[in-house]
Image (cartoon, rainbow, N blue to C red; front, top):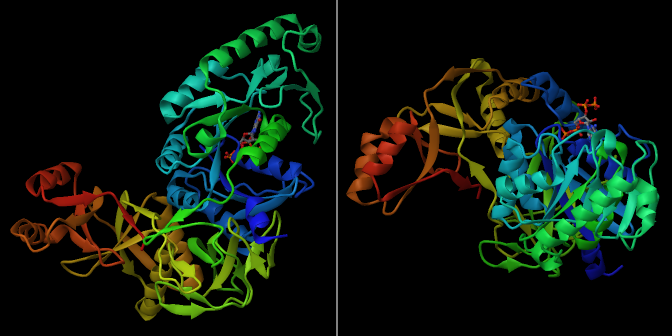
Length: 529
Ligand code: G4P
Protein backbone atom coordinates (compact mmCIF):
# COMPACT_ATOMS: atom_id res chain seq x y z
CA UNK A 1 0.00 0.00 0.00
CA UNK A 2 1.28 3.46 -0.83
CA UNK A 3 2.51 5.88 1.80
CA UNK A 4 -0.43 8.23 1.15
CA UNK A 5 -2.99 5.45 1.43
CA UNK A 6 -1.45 4.39 4.73
CA UNK A 7 -1.89 7.90 6.11
CA UNK A 8 -5.46 8.16 4.84
CA UNK A 9 -6.51 4.99 6.59
CA UNK A 10 -5.31 6.02 10.04
CA UNK A 11 -7.47 7.39 12.86
CA UNK A 12 -5.70 8.18 16.12
CA UNK A 13 -7.90 9.26 18.99
CA UNK A 14 -8.43 9.28 22.73
CA UNK A 15 -11.49 8.58 24.84
CA UNK A 16 -12.03 11.04 27.66
CA UNK A 17 -14.51 11.04 30.50
CA UNK A 18 -15.03 11.55 34.18
CA UNK A 19 -14.16 8.30 36.01
CA UNK A 20 -16.98 5.73 35.88
CA UNK A 21 -18.78 7.15 32.87
CA UNK A 22 -17.80 4.06 30.90
CA UNK A 23 -14.53 4.80 29.10
CA UNK A 24 -13.00 1.38 29.74
CA UNK A 25 -16.21 -0.40 28.79
CA UNK A 26 -16.53 1.57 25.56
CA UNK A 27 -12.89 0.97 24.67
CA UNK A 28 -13.40 -2.71 25.15
CA UNK A 29 -16.55 -2.79 23.03
CA UNK A 30 -14.82 -0.92 20.22
CA UNK A 31 -12.11 -3.57 20.28
CA UNK A 32 -14.73 -6.32 20.24
CA UNK A 33 -16.40 -4.81 17.19
CA UNK A 34 -13.03 -4.44 15.55
CA UNK A 35 -12.42 -8.14 16.15
CA UNK A 36 -9.26 -7.25 18.07
CA UNK A 37 -10.34 -9.10 21.20
CA UNK A 38 -12.70 -12.03 21.55
CA UNK A 39 -14.27 -11.46 24.91
CA UNK A 40 -15.16 -8.76 27.37
CA UNK A 41 -12.82 -8.27 30.32
CA UNK A 42 -9.66 -8.17 28.23
CA UNK A 43 -9.07 -4.46 28.65
CA UNK A 44 -7.66 -3.61 32.03
CA UNK A 45 -9.30 -0.72 33.76
CA UNK A 46 -6.91 2.07 34.59
CA UNK A 47 -9.18 3.19 37.35
CA UNK A 48 -7.77 4.16 40.70
CA UNK A 49 -10.18 3.89 43.54
CA UNK A 50 -10.10 6.75 45.99
CA UNK A 51 -6.52 7.52 46.89
CA UNK A 52 -5.36 3.93 46.85
CA UNK A 53 -1.73 3.95 45.86
CA UNK A 54 -1.62 0.18 45.79
CA UNK A 55 -4.21 0.26 42.99
CA UNK A 56 -2.06 2.62 41.04
CA UNK A 57 1.05 0.53 41.61
CA UNK A 58 -0.71 -2.60 40.52
CA UNK A 59 -1.98 -0.91 37.38
CA UNK A 60 1.46 0.50 36.68
CA UNK A 61 3.06 -2.85 37.23
CA UNK A 62 0.70 -4.57 34.83
CA UNK A 63 1.16 -1.84 32.29
CA UNK A 64 4.89 -1.71 32.72
CA UNK A 65 5.03 -5.33 31.76
CA UNK A 66 2.45 -5.45 29.01
CA UNK A 67 2.29 -1.75 28.09
CA UNK A 68 -0.61 -2.88 25.99
CA UNK A 69 -3.13 -0.50 27.45
CA UNK A 70 -1.22 2.67 26.63
CA UNK A 71 -2.02 2.34 22.94
CA UNK A 72 -4.66 0.01 21.59
CA UNK A 73 -4.57 -0.46 17.85
CA UNK A 74 -6.92 -2.44 15.66
CA UNK A 75 -8.26 -2.57 12.14
CA UNK A 76 -11.89 -2.04 11.26
CA UNK A 77 -13.07 -2.08 7.62
CA UNK A 78 -9.47 -1.60 6.53
CA UNK A 79 -9.09 1.48 8.74
CA UNK A 80 -6.22 1.42 11.21
CA UNK A 81 -7.50 2.73 14.52
CA UNK A 82 -5.15 3.79 17.33
CA UNK A 83 -6.80 4.45 20.69
CA UNK A 84 -4.57 6.28 23.14
CA UNK A 85 -5.28 5.55 26.77
CA UNK A 86 -5.97 8.49 29.07
CA UNK A 87 -6.03 8.07 32.84
CA UNK A 88 -9.34 9.19 34.32
CA UNK A 89 -8.11 9.95 37.86
CA UNK A 90 -7.75 13.68 38.43
CA UNK A 91 -4.33 13.34 40.05
CA UNK A 92 -3.06 12.07 36.71
CA UNK A 93 -4.84 14.65 34.58
CA UNK A 94 -1.52 16.01 33.37
CA UNK A 95 -0.75 12.69 31.73
CA UNK A 96 -4.08 12.93 29.95
CA UNK A 97 -3.43 16.52 28.84
CA UNK A 98 -0.14 15.45 27.32
CA UNK A 99 -1.71 12.49 25.58
CA UNK A 100 -4.23 14.89 24.06
CA UNK A 101 -1.33 16.53 22.17
CA UNK A 102 -0.92 13.25 20.28
CA UNK A 103 -4.52 12.57 19.24
CA UNK A 104 -6.24 13.71 16.07
CA UNK A 105 -9.71 13.54 17.60
CA UNK A 106 -11.51 12.44 20.77
CA UNK A 107 -14.66 10.70 21.91
CA UNK A 108 -16.18 12.15 25.07
CA UNK A 109 -18.17 9.68 27.20
CA UNK A 110 -20.93 11.07 29.41
CA UNK A 111 -23.06 9.16 31.91
CA UNK A 112 -26.75 9.73 31.09
CA UNK A 113 -27.67 10.01 34.76
CA UNK A 114 -24.77 12.13 35.98
CA UNK A 115 -24.53 14.40 32.97
CA UNK A 116 -21.48 16.61 32.54
CA UNK A 117 -19.03 16.06 35.41
CA UNK A 118 -16.02 18.00 36.61
CA UNK A 119 -13.25 16.04 34.94
CA UNK A 120 -15.11 16.05 31.62
CA UNK A 121 -15.34 19.83 31.77
CA UNK A 122 -11.59 20.23 32.27
CA UNK A 123 -10.60 17.79 29.55
CA UNK A 124 -13.08 19.11 27.01
CA UNK A 125 -11.85 22.63 27.64
CA UNK A 126 -8.35 21.58 26.63
CA UNK A 127 -9.71 19.95 23.45
CA UNK A 128 -11.83 22.98 22.67
CA UNK A 129 -8.86 25.33 23.01
CA UNK A 130 -6.97 23.21 20.50
CA UNK A 131 -9.95 22.72 18.15
CA UNK A 132 -9.67 18.96 18.46
CA UNK A 133 -12.66 17.31 16.73
CA UNK A 134 -14.94 15.68 19.32
CA UNK A 135 -17.76 13.15 19.20
CA UNK A 136 -19.93 12.82 22.31
CA UNK A 137 -21.21 9.41 23.41
CA UNK A 138 -23.97 9.46 26.01
CA UNK A 139 -23.73 6.17 27.84
CA UNK A 140 -25.82 3.94 30.14
CA UNK A 141 -29.16 4.51 28.38
CA UNK A 142 -30.29 1.21 29.91
CA UNK A 143 -30.56 3.17 33.17
CA UNK A 144 -32.86 5.99 34.17
CA UNK A 145 -31.18 9.28 33.43
CA UNK A 146 -31.69 12.80 32.30
CA UNK A 147 -33.99 13.74 29.44
CA UNK A 148 -32.08 13.69 26.14
CA UNK A 149 -32.83 17.33 25.29
CA UNK A 150 -31.87 18.50 28.78
CA UNK A 151 -28.62 16.63 28.47
CA UNK A 152 -27.85 18.11 25.07
CA UNK A 153 -28.49 21.55 26.59
CA UNK A 154 -26.18 20.75 29.47
CA UNK A 155 -23.45 19.60 27.09
CA UNK A 156 -23.77 22.81 25.11
CA UNK A 157 -23.76 25.06 28.14
CA UNK A 158 -21.30 23.43 30.50
CA UNK A 159 -18.87 22.27 27.83
CA UNK A 160 -19.30 25.20 25.45
CA UNK A 161 -19.97 22.90 22.52
CA UNK A 162 -22.27 23.17 19.52
CA UNK A 163 -23.91 19.78 19.24
CA UNK A 164 -25.95 17.88 16.72
CA UNK A 165 -27.38 14.44 17.58
CA UNK A 166 -26.63 11.74 15.01
CA UNK A 167 -28.61 9.13 16.92
CA UNK A 168 -31.52 9.46 19.30
CA UNK A 169 -32.78 7.19 22.10
CA UNK A 170 -36.27 5.74 22.11
CA UNK A 171 -37.08 5.91 25.81
CA UNK A 172 -34.58 5.07 28.52
CA UNK A 173 -34.11 2.88 31.59
CA UNK A 174 -36.92 0.31 31.82
CA UNK A 175 -38.60 1.95 28.86
CA UNK A 176 -35.51 1.90 26.68
CA UNK A 177 -36.60 0.51 23.32
CA UNK A 178 -33.67 1.25 21.11
CA UNK A 179 -31.95 3.90 19.09
CA UNK A 180 -32.94 5.75 15.97
CA UNK A 181 -29.84 6.29 13.90
CA UNK A 182 -30.21 9.72 12.33
CA UNK A 183 -26.96 9.29 10.42
CA UNK A 184 -27.92 6.02 8.71
CA UNK A 185 -31.71 6.35 9.01
CA UNK A 186 -32.35 3.02 10.69
CA UNK A 187 -33.45 1.63 14.00
CA UNK A 188 -31.66 -0.68 16.35
CA UNK A 189 -33.94 -2.34 18.86
CA UNK A 190 -32.65 -2.90 22.38
CA UNK A 191 -32.86 -6.41 23.74
CA UNK A 192 -30.59 -6.03 26.76
CA UNK A 193 -28.52 -8.99 25.67
CA UNK A 194 -24.92 -7.93 26.05
CA UNK A 195 -23.64 -11.14 24.53
CA UNK A 196 -24.70 -10.31 21.02
CA UNK A 197 -21.88 -8.77 19.12
CA UNK A 198 -23.38 -7.53 15.92
CA UNK A 199 -26.83 -6.05 16.19
CA UNK A 200 -29.44 -6.29 13.53
CA UNK A 201 -30.71 -2.95 12.43
CA UNK A 202 -33.97 -2.28 10.70
CA UNK A 203 -34.09 0.28 7.93
CA UNK A 204 -36.62 3.01 8.57
CA UNK A 205 -36.42 5.44 5.71
CA UNK A 206 -39.73 7.05 6.61
CA UNK A 207 -40.42 7.76 10.26
CA UNK A 208 -44.14 8.22 9.55
CA UNK A 209 -44.58 4.62 8.38
CA UNK A 210 -46.71 2.39 10.61
CA UNK A 211 -43.80 -0.04 10.75
CA UNK A 212 -42.33 2.12 13.47
CA UNK A 213 -45.48 1.76 15.61
CA UNK A 214 -45.34 -2.01 15.15
CA UNK A 215 -41.71 -2.11 16.19
CA UNK A 216 -41.65 0.08 19.29
CA UNK A 217 -45.33 0.64 20.16
CA UNK A 218 -47.64 3.51 19.30
CA UNK A 219 -46.80 5.95 22.02
CA UNK A 220 -42.96 5.64 21.88
CA UNK A 221 -43.22 5.89 18.08
CA UNK A 222 -45.20 9.08 18.21
CA UNK A 223 -42.82 10.53 20.82
CA UNK A 224 -39.88 9.69 18.62
CA UNK A 225 -41.48 11.42 15.63
CA UNK A 226 -42.00 14.56 17.70
CA UNK A 227 -38.50 14.43 19.09
CA UNK A 228 -36.84 13.96 15.72
CA UNK A 229 -38.87 16.86 14.37
CA UNK A 230 -37.60 18.93 17.27
CA UNK A 231 -34.02 17.76 16.68
CA UNK A 232 -34.25 18.80 13.04
CA UNK A 233 -35.69 22.15 14.06
CA UNK A 234 -33.21 22.98 16.81
CA UNK A 235 -29.86 21.54 15.86
CA UNK A 236 -27.65 22.33 12.89
CA UNK A 237 -27.24 19.73 10.15
CA UNK A 238 -24.12 17.66 10.48
CA UNK A 239 -21.25 19.23 8.61
CA UNK A 240 -17.96 17.35 8.34
CA UNK A 241 -15.86 20.45 7.85
CA UNK A 242 -17.32 22.10 10.96
CA UNK A 243 -16.78 18.90 12.97
CA UNK A 244 -13.20 18.50 11.83
CA UNK A 245 -12.32 22.08 12.64
CA UNK A 246 -13.72 21.63 16.16
CA UNK A 247 -16.82 23.77 15.63
CA UNK A 248 -19.57 21.12 15.69
CA UNK A 249 -19.83 18.01 17.86
CA UNK A 250 -22.00 15.06 16.83
CA UNK A 251 -23.69 13.17 19.65
CA UNK A 252 -24.50 9.46 19.91
CA UNK A 253 -26.52 7.61 22.53
CA UNK A 254 -26.08 4.03 23.70
CA UNK A 255 -25.12 1.56 26.35
CA UNK A 256 -21.53 0.42 26.15
CA UNK A 257 -22.10 -2.36 28.65
CA UNK A 258 -24.81 -3.82 26.45
CA UNK A 259 -22.88 -3.36 23.19
CA UNK A 260 -25.59 -1.01 22.22
CA UNK A 261 -25.14 2.02 19.99
CA UNK A 262 -21.43 1.23 19.75
CA UNK A 263 -21.47 -0.02 16.17
CA UNK A 264 -23.32 3.15 15.08
CA UNK A 265 -20.65 5.21 16.79
CA UNK A 266 -17.78 3.24 15.27
CA UNK A 267 -19.20 3.22 11.73
CA UNK A 268 -19.74 6.94 11.79
CA UNK A 269 -16.39 7.54 13.46
CA UNK A 270 -14.37 5.79 10.75
CA UNK A 271 -16.24 7.75 8.12
CA UNK A 272 -15.96 11.23 9.60
CA UNK A 273 -13.00 11.25 12.01
CA UNK A 274 -9.96 13.11 10.73
CA UNK A 275 -6.90 11.40 9.31
CA UNK A 276 -3.58 12.46 10.92
CA UNK A 277 -3.49 16.24 11.16
CA UNK A 278 -0.71 18.68 10.37
CA UNK A 279 1.19 19.90 13.44
CA UNK A 280 2.74 23.23 14.28
CA UNK A 281 6.41 23.25 15.24
CA UNK A 282 8.47 26.20 16.43
CA UNK A 283 9.60 26.87 12.86
CA UNK A 284 6.73 25.77 10.59
CA UNK A 285 3.58 23.72 10.09
CA UNK A 286 4.49 20.11 9.31
CA UNK A 287 2.19 18.04 7.08
CA UNK A 288 1.81 14.28 7.53
CA UNK A 289 2.34 13.73 3.79
CA UNK A 290 5.87 15.13 3.88
CA UNK A 291 8.29 12.36 3.07
CA UNK A 292 10.77 13.09 5.86
CA UNK A 293 10.06 11.61 9.27
CA UNK A 294 9.32 13.82 12.27
CA UNK A 295 7.71 12.92 15.59
CA UNK A 296 7.62 13.81 19.26
CA UNK A 297 7.62 12.11 22.64
CA UNK A 298 4.32 12.60 24.48
CA UNK A 299 4.64 9.95 27.14
CA UNK A 300 7.39 8.05 28.90
CA UNK A 301 6.60 4.86 30.65
CA UNK A 302 8.84 3.21 33.16
CA UNK A 303 9.13 -0.49 32.87
CA UNK A 304 8.24 -1.77 36.28
CA UNK A 305 9.41 -5.27 35.57
CA UNK A 306 12.45 -5.49 37.88
CA UNK A 307 14.33 -7.55 35.28
CA UNK A 308 14.07 -4.87 32.62
CA UNK A 309 14.76 -1.47 34.02
CA UNK A 310 14.58 0.61 30.90
CA UNK A 311 11.79 2.88 29.90
CA UNK A 312 9.61 3.17 26.86
CA UNK A 313 9.23 6.55 25.17
CA UNK A 314 6.02 6.90 23.17
CA UNK A 315 6.54 8.81 19.95
CA UNK A 316 3.69 10.11 17.81
CA UNK A 317 4.67 10.12 14.16
CA UNK A 318 3.74 13.47 12.63
CA UNK A 319 5.21 13.17 9.12
CA UNK A 320 7.05 10.68 6.91
CA UNK A 321 7.62 7.04 7.74
CA UNK A 322 9.54 5.89 10.80
CA UNK A 323 11.95 3.08 9.90
CA UNK A 324 13.73 0.67 12.14
CA UNK A 325 17.56 0.94 12.35
CA UNK A 326 17.60 4.34 10.70
CA UNK A 327 19.50 7.21 12.34
CA UNK A 328 17.25 10.05 13.51
CA UNK A 329 18.17 13.37 15.03
CA UNK A 330 17.32 13.85 18.71
CA UNK A 331 16.92 17.61 18.34
CA UNK A 332 17.42 18.63 21.99
CA UNK A 333 20.64 16.63 22.27
CA UNK A 334 21.72 17.33 18.68
CA UNK A 335 22.60 13.67 18.43
CA UNK A 336 21.71 10.93 15.97
CA UNK A 337 20.07 7.84 17.44
CA UNK A 338 19.14 4.52 15.85
CA UNK A 339 16.42 2.23 17.12
CA UNK A 340 16.82 -1.46 16.57
CA UNK A 341 13.58 -2.58 18.18
CA UNK A 342 10.81 0.00 17.89
CA UNK A 343 7.50 -1.31 19.20
CA UNK A 344 4.14 -0.99 17.55
CA UNK A 345 1.05 -1.61 19.64
CA UNK A 346 -1.90 -3.85 19.02
CA UNK A 347 -4.89 -4.61 21.13
CA UNK A 348 -3.23 -7.11 23.42
CA UNK A 349 0.41 -7.06 22.52
CA UNK A 350 3.34 -5.06 21.29
CA UNK A 351 5.55 -6.09 18.42
CA UNK A 352 8.76 -4.93 16.81
CA UNK A 353 8.00 -3.21 13.52
CA UNK A 354 10.09 -2.18 10.55
CA UNK A 355 8.00 0.75 9.46
CA UNK A 356 5.30 2.98 10.95
CA UNK A 357 3.29 5.84 9.46
CA UNK A 358 1.94 9.25 10.49
CA UNK A 359 -0.77 8.80 13.11
CA UNK A 360 0.96 5.73 14.54
CA UNK A 361 2.65 5.56 17.89
CA UNK A 362 6.01 3.83 18.24
CA UNK A 363 7.49 2.83 21.56
CA UNK A 364 11.26 3.36 21.76
CA UNK A 365 13.46 1.73 24.37
CA UNK A 366 15.03 4.49 26.38
CA UNK A 367 17.75 4.47 28.96
CA UNK A 368 17.25 8.07 29.97
CA UNK A 369 17.89 10.19 26.89
CA UNK A 370 14.29 11.26 26.34
CA UNK A 371 12.01 13.60 28.14
CA UNK A 372 8.47 14.59 27.35
CA UNK A 373 8.26 16.99 24.44
CA UNK A 374 11.46 15.81 22.72
CA UNK A 375 11.41 15.90 18.94
CA UNK A 376 12.97 13.42 16.49
CA UNK A 377 13.59 14.29 12.83
CA UNK A 378 15.65 13.15 9.84
CA UNK A 379 17.98 16.09 10.37
CA UNK A 380 15.84 19.22 10.33
CA UNK A 381 16.06 21.29 13.49
CA UNK A 382 12.53 21.86 14.70
CA UNK A 383 10.66 21.37 17.96
CA UNK A 384 7.05 20.46 18.48
CA UNK A 385 5.59 22.86 20.99
CA UNK A 386 2.47 22.86 23.01
CA UNK A 387 3.09 20.13 25.55
CA UNK A 388 2.11 22.06 28.61
CA UNK A 389 3.41 21.80 32.10
CA UNK A 390 0.78 22.94 34.59
CA UNK A 391 1.23 24.96 37.68
CA UNK A 392 1.31 22.38 40.50
CA UNK A 393 -1.15 22.48 43.37
CA UNK A 394 0.84 20.59 46.01
CA UNK A 395 4.36 21.27 47.27
CA UNK A 396 6.73 19.42 49.56
CA UNK A 397 10.41 19.51 50.31
CA UNK A 398 12.08 16.27 49.36
CA UNK A 399 14.86 15.01 51.66
CA UNK A 400 17.33 12.20 51.26
CA UNK A 401 16.65 9.49 53.82
CA UNK A 402 19.68 7.37 53.00
CA UNK A 403 22.93 9.37 52.66
CA UNK A 404 24.68 6.42 51.01
CA UNK A 405 22.22 6.55 48.13
CA UNK A 406 22.31 10.22 47.21
CA UNK A 407 23.42 9.51 43.64
CA UNK A 408 20.57 7.05 43.12
CA UNK A 409 18.15 9.57 44.57
CA UNK A 410 19.32 12.33 42.24
CA UNK A 411 19.11 10.04 39.22
CA UNK A 412 15.68 8.78 40.22
CA UNK A 413 14.29 12.25 40.74
CA UNK A 414 15.79 13.39 37.47
CA UNK A 415 14.25 10.55 35.48
CA UNK A 416 10.85 10.71 37.16
CA UNK A 417 10.67 14.42 36.37
CA UNK A 418 11.55 13.70 32.71
CA UNK A 419 8.65 11.28 32.67
CA UNK A 420 6.45 14.13 33.81
CA UNK A 421 5.38 12.51 37.08
CA UNK A 422 5.90 15.79 38.94
CA UNK A 423 7.98 18.97 38.77
CA UNK A 424 11.16 19.77 40.59
CA UNK A 425 11.98 23.25 41.86
CA UNK A 426 15.24 24.36 43.42
CA UNK A 427 14.96 27.22 45.90
CA UNK A 428 17.12 30.21 45.01
CA UNK A 429 17.86 31.00 48.64
CA UNK A 430 19.28 27.71 49.89
CA UNK A 431 19.23 25.21 47.02
CA UNK A 432 16.65 22.98 48.70
CA UNK A 433 14.61 20.76 46.40
CA UNK A 434 10.85 21.03 46.24
CA UNK A 435 8.54 18.61 44.44
CA UNK A 436 5.39 20.12 42.99
CA UNK A 437 2.53 17.90 41.84
CA UNK A 438 -0.94 18.26 40.43
CA UNK A 439 -2.37 15.59 42.76
CA UNK A 440 -1.42 14.36 46.23
CA UNK A 441 -1.24 10.74 45.08
CA UNK A 442 1.97 11.42 43.17
CA UNK A 443 4.02 11.77 46.37
CA UNK A 444 3.40 8.17 47.30
CA UNK A 445 4.06 7.08 43.74
CA UNK A 446 7.40 8.93 43.70
CA UNK A 447 8.45 7.52 47.06
CA UNK A 448 7.50 4.00 45.99
CA UNK A 449 9.23 4.22 42.65
CA UNK A 450 12.40 5.82 44.03
CA UNK A 451 12.71 2.91 46.41
CA UNK A 452 11.77 0.09 44.05
CA UNK A 453 13.38 1.30 40.88
CA UNK A 454 16.38 3.27 42.11
CA UNK A 455 17.04 1.88 45.57
CA UNK A 456 16.77 5.35 47.09
CA UNK A 457 14.77 6.53 50.05
CA UNK A 458 13.17 9.90 50.56
CA UNK A 459 11.08 11.75 53.08
CA UNK A 460 8.91 14.80 52.59
CA UNK A 461 8.46 17.94 54.58
CA UNK A 462 5.59 20.34 54.28
CA UNK A 463 6.09 23.66 52.64
CA UNK A 464 3.61 26.47 52.70
CA UNK A 465 2.99 27.29 49.06
CA UNK A 466 -0.43 27.94 47.59
CA UNK A 467 0.46 28.41 43.94
CA UNK A 468 3.53 28.37 41.72
CA UNK A 469 3.78 30.46 38.61
CA UNK A 470 6.43 31.00 36.04
CA UNK A 471 7.91 34.48 35.99
CA UNK A 472 8.19 36.21 32.66
CA UNK A 473 9.74 39.69 33.02
CA UNK A 474 9.10 42.21 30.31
CA UNK A 475 12.66 43.29 30.79
CA UNK A 476 14.97 41.48 33.19
CA UNK A 477 17.20 44.55 33.54
CA UNK A 478 14.59 47.03 34.76
CA UNK A 479 14.37 48.22 38.35
CA UNK A 480 10.99 46.66 38.93
CA UNK A 481 12.32 43.20 38.14
CA UNK A 482 15.45 43.75 40.21
CA UNK A 483 13.37 44.82 43.19
CA UNK A 484 11.06 41.85 42.73
CA UNK A 485 13.91 39.32 42.72
CA UNK A 486 15.44 40.91 45.83
CA UNK A 487 12.28 41.36 47.88
CA UNK A 488 10.84 37.99 46.97
CA UNK A 489 14.05 35.96 46.98
CA UNK A 490 12.68 33.69 49.69
CA UNK A 491 9.85 32.68 47.37
CA UNK A 492 11.84 32.15 44.20
CA UNK A 493 12.98 28.89 42.67
CA UNK A 494 14.20 27.53 39.36
CA UNK A 495 12.46 24.72 37.52
CA UNK A 496 14.37 21.96 35.73
CA UNK A 497 14.75 24.07 32.63
CA UNK A 498 16.23 26.90 34.66
CA UNK A 499 13.12 29.06 34.36
CA UNK A 500 12.32 31.29 37.32
CA UNK A 501 9.27 30.32 39.35
CA UNK A 502 7.47 32.32 42.03
CA UNK A 503 6.15 30.18 44.90
CA UNK A 504 3.35 32.25 46.42
CA UNK A 505 2.44 31.35 49.99
CA UNK A 506 -1.15 32.48 49.51
CA UNK A 507 -3.39 33.55 46.67
CA UNK A 508 -3.63 36.94 48.37
CA UNK A 509 0.13 37.45 48.30
CA UNK A 510 0.17 36.40 44.65
CA UNK A 511 -2.44 39.05 43.89
CA UNK A 512 -0.53 41.69 45.80
CA UNK A 513 2.68 40.80 44.00
CA UNK A 514 0.95 40.96 40.62
CA UNK A 515 -0.34 44.44 41.49
CA UNK A 516 2.96 45.67 42.77
CA UNK A 517 4.96 44.51 39.76
CA UNK A 518 2.69 45.08 36.77
CA UNK A 519 5.43 44.69 34.16
CA UNK A 520 6.09 41.08 35.21
CA UNK A 521 3.93 38.32 33.84
CA UNK A 522 3.00 35.45 36.16
CA UNK A 523 2.13 32.39 34.09
CA UNK A 524 0.22 29.29 35.16
CA UNK A 525 1.45 27.01 32.41
CA UNK A 526 4.83 26.55 30.88
CA UNK A 527 6.07 24.45 27.97
CA UNK A 528 8.39 21.51 28.30
CA UNK A 529 10.92 22.49 25.70
P1 G4P B 1 -14.43 4.40 33.31
O1 G4P B 1 -13.41 3.65 32.54
O2 G4P B 1 -14.95 5.61 32.59
O3 G4P B 1 -14.03 4.74 34.70
O4 G4P B 1 -15.73 3.49 33.47
P2 G4P B 1 -15.94 1.92 33.31
O5 G4P B 1 -15.95 1.55 31.87
O6 G4P B 1 -15.03 1.20 34.20
O7 G4P B 1 -17.43 1.81 33.82
C1 G4P B 1 -17.82 2.21 35.12
C2 G4P B 1 -18.98 1.38 35.59
O8 G4P B 1 -20.11 1.64 34.75
C3 G4P B 1 -18.73 -0.12 35.52
O9 G4P B 1 -19.45 -0.71 36.58
C4 G4P B 1 -19.39 -0.50 34.20
O10 G4P B 1 -19.78 -1.85 34.16
C5 G4P B 1 -20.58 0.42 34.20
N1 G4P B 1 -21.10 0.69 32.84
C6 G4P B 1 -20.42 1.02 31.73
N2 G4P B 1 -21.26 1.17 30.69
C7 G4P B 1 -22.50 0.94 31.15
C8 G4P B 1 -23.79 0.94 30.54
O11 G4P B 1 -23.96 1.15 29.36
N3 G4P B 1 -24.84 0.64 31.36
C9 G4P B 1 -24.70 0.38 32.68
N4 G4P B 1 -25.80 0.10 33.37
N5 G4P B 1 -23.49 0.36 33.29
C10 G4P B 1 -22.41 0.64 32.53
P3 G4P B 1 -18.77 -1.13 37.93
O12 G4P B 1 -19.80 -1.80 38.73
O13 G4P B 1 -18.08 0.07 38.53
O14 G4P B 1 -17.61 -2.06 37.50
P4 G4P B 1 -17.66 -3.56 37.11
O15 G4P B 1 -17.41 -4.23 38.39
O16 G4P B 1 -19.02 -3.83 36.53
O17 G4P B 1 -16.56 -3.68 36.11
